Amino acid sequence: MTQDAAGAGAALDAGAAPDTLGHTSVFPPPPSVYRHFTEQNLAWLALLQEAKAGRPPTDDADAVARLRTKKEILMQAIGEGSELVPPDLDLEMELTPPNIAWIEEDGGFQLFGQRWPIPETTPSLAQLHLPDLCGADVEGAQDRRAALQTLLHTLLQTYWELTGDLLRPVQPYDVWVPAPGAHSVPEGTEAPAQGTWQPSSHIQDRLKHMETTVINFQYLVNQMRPAHNREALRQLLAAQIARRREAAAQVRTQCAEIRREMERLTM
Image 1: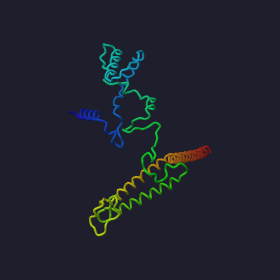
Image 2: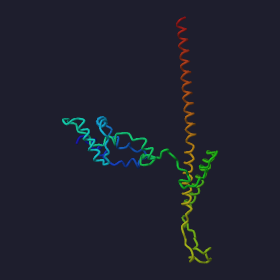
Image 3: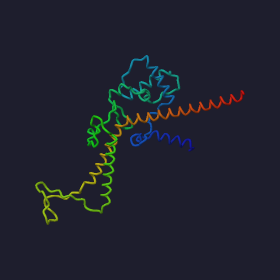
Image 4: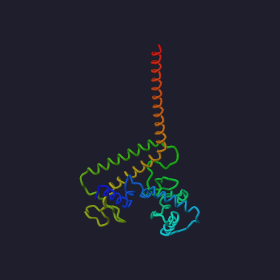
């Protein structure tokens, strides 16, 4: 087998593989349908649409019956004596752009394994069943920079406390939980009868608190995206103006040098 044949075989294997990377990869590949957009298939699609222009519309719910009908229309369009063979592909279904009205009626669309609503909405912290640590969902003016600083300090403080817990000597993190009706541990007893020893959950609580703090931080940062975009656009326009002024100054300097050289030559 030559290298070209081996490469072609590898390409076919990659094309036949299931599109699992679209759901697992951070940078997913394009949908597999792009392989159908060849010049031959597009020419067949144009011929099919032209041939169906003078025909009554068909309502084939079955995919096999619909494909058979379209192949018959194409065979009639190219003639019986032609050696061309229509592709075994539902051209209109695969190559025709989706109907935007249907997507809007459906209320959303699928993209890389996730459903995106129309219009796009961001769930609040209450909808995510998370506590609001910074008042992000409260209406009215708010100093988001101060809230971000507070969340950052909370995150660092919790991380410092968690690190301190992990650096302590190994010890049983147990908490005595009295049984219903028992209020305290009897003195002088090593194994109280009423109650149970349960592992402490303060480390898990701190981890959960850190997770909640990070989500609040990200939620507040996302609310500041419009202000960030405006500031980035302002800086971009200011940089463009500065570059154009510098270029204009260079042109004026070059023009002045040319005038001086022309005056020297005419004297």
